[in-house]
Structures are given as structure tokens and as C-alpha cells.
Length: 279
Image 1 (cartoon, helix red, strand yellow):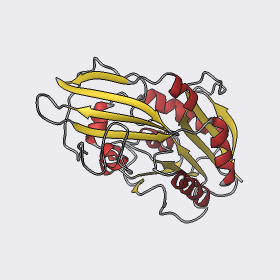
Image 2 (cartoon, rainbow, N blue to C red):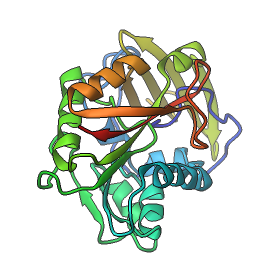
Image 3 (cartoon, one colour):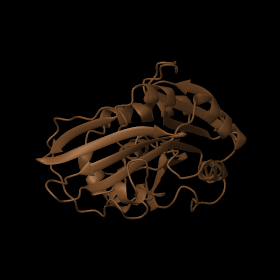
Image 4 (tube, rainbow, N blue to C red):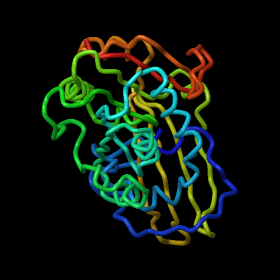
């Protein structure tokens, strides 16, 4: 998921840069700990995000792609969309495996990071997943890794994303959605963690409000200085609700996994990976 809603590494002391745009308390409707900008991801997914969470596991990305390749059964040369590709961890592996994969993301800094990966530049598109800039039925498959769904202010916008997914996929195309397990997250939510990055204080608070889980990230703020503030917000769907939502938009989830190793989804699984095909 974007960052982690669970306990962070409080001992990390990595280089920190405040190079990208931030939201401060009082700006853009940020009124307190129970609020977040409607489109929080526009500010958050930048250089600071990359430096705060550099632990995104390359080996884990390889396992996720391997699971999709094994179960999807796509031949070399198939066109696959990596929806919300971020810094290109999965996209690079999809392309290295012979797929004609294209990555889309809204974040220019993350796409810049992706372009530094061998074999990825030229396959990246900056776009909003609610309005994909592709013709109908042009892709043979799709992946959406690392909880990159449920970011928007209204459930209707999530539906718009699923409609766009169905529109750009051919009939019978295999898709993989890598999402959080809502009950697991709620049960293990860490309300607060405080750490440092190169001597800069980072405080993270987490809570559930309605059908969404929130995180507020405060960076710096020593003395009388206000901290830089970022937000994360993800809508929580139960496995049953997410399956139903997918099906309503022509996406039939046929398998559920609890991890990238392909183990079946269980009540104590940390993640929910839904594999299926378009109807």
C-alpha cells in the first residue's frame, strides 16, 4: 500500500529531501488529524515518498510478477497495462519477461524514477487512472500492484477506475489486483509511530474513519516551525465487497491469494490478491 498503515521502521536514518511540493496544516482543506486533501496523492507521491520508503522490495516485485505470469498464461508479446506503475519495479520485470507492458501513473517524479530502469523508458505514460488514454480492448492483460486502488474521495470514482480497466481490456483478459486485507489492517493498525531520517523527525498517525483508513505523515517541525504534512487515504473493501464491485463492472475474480507466493487467501492473510478475467 502507499507507505504502510502498520508499524514503520523507527530506526531508519536515511537521506531526506524536501524537494517536492508539500501540504501544510491549514492549506487545501487540511483542518486536522481527521482530514485529508481530496487528491492527497498529487502531493505525496514524489521524491520525499521515494526517500521515506526506499524499502520497496525488488524481490517482492519479482514474486508478484511471477505469480501473474504463471496464472495468467499470456504468451510473449502480449500487451499488458501496469496500472499505477510507480517507480517501475513491476513494469521492468513484465517487460524483461517478454510482455509488451505499458506503465501509467499520475506522479511525474515516480515516472522519472521509473525511466532510470533499463528497458522501461518509452513504455511510460502519465495519466489519471479514472480516464485512461487508450483505445477500447487494446490490452491483453492488466496488473494493479501494491494497493493502488481506493485512493479517491468517493466510491463512484473507484467504479470509474474499474470501468476504465474493463474498457481497455479485451474479453477474457487476465487481471491481477493486489489490495490490502481490510480486516487485517484494522486489527493491527498502529495509531502512532515516531522515527528519524538523518536527524529529521518523522511522526506518522493512523486511524480508521468510516470506510477509509488514513495516515498523516509529519516531517520536521522542530521548535516553532510547522512540520511538512502529507496524507494517505485508502477506502476499505472487504474481500466479498471488492469481488462484487469487480463483477458489476465486468471483471470476474476467480482466485484469491494471501501473498505473492500464491498461498490461498485466508482470514489471517495480510494481503488480498484477486486474479480474474474480463467478462
